[in-house]
Length: 82
Image (cartoon, rainbow, N blue to C red):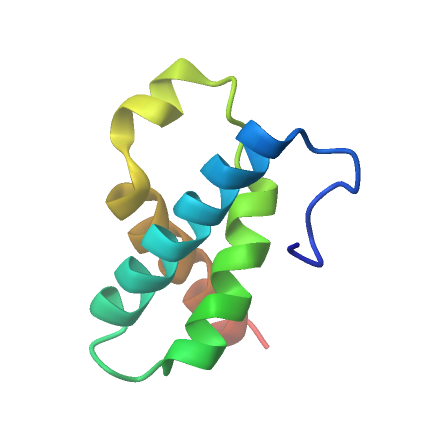
């Protein structure tokens, strides 16, 4: 079970979140142009998936690729501000 997920997630929801984390990991590696390895991407994917508002239909329409790309941009912007 993801360390970022709620302990009371139903099995069906857990399967979906596992799928979303896997897809997010793949997209983060792709959009990072190889600067993120799978281990770091998996950690970031778990954090990103835990922050997604799954009830937001406009966001869900964008898809995991869009969310991953924008999550990386957000992280990069926060790092550049330091």
